[in-house]
Image (cartoon, rainbow, N blue to C red):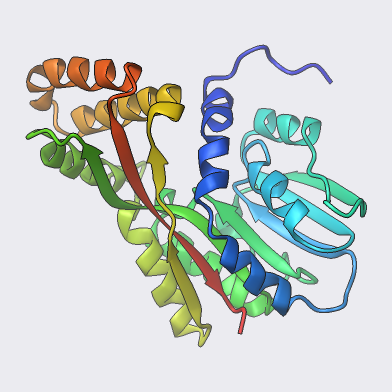
Length: 273
């Protein structure tokens, strides 16, 4: 299999993968391990898997043989996931199957036999109805769900700038925009997911898992900031002129290692009790 030399979204996923790995809640993985039954191989369904970073991070943290089923709409990303399979720390076999599918249409029957359902950086891109369907499928399948790195609308800069709050508010509004009839939940998605599981009688644990970007992550900081500001300006075009100098200052500070950014996320573990 020959992969394209470049794919902007795949490149972005690769750039953020180390920061994602550093942020995720390790103690929730301990809770998952304590909940796992004796059935092997462990079957894990990973929703919106992209290039498979969640599997690469989690598989070495789970015991024994594993079978990962990766879902995404983008066949190119799934090709990359197959080319970078996860490995188990104890040398147990890990197999990977990919499915090009609409994860918002999955049912409990689709997840039958699963020992765990996972997703990373997914929930904030969904609607309320889509989250309800995914939660219903997980609850119906009776397995734990580990949904990590959902954006929650908390961004702080050091040093601060007077425009930070206004741009952040515009970005949050962009996250909640309506796209082709779909009104996204954006930073409200994590709380909505907890509430949806509660309606099914499934308890959920929540951990704050922010990115902490500093001098060691200058490339990621610049790429994240550029996308963050572009989304804010798309939502509020009147910000374009006012943020031109702001962007220059922020990017120069990032390049010099003089800017730190904390980007808030939450990790959720449902059904592990």
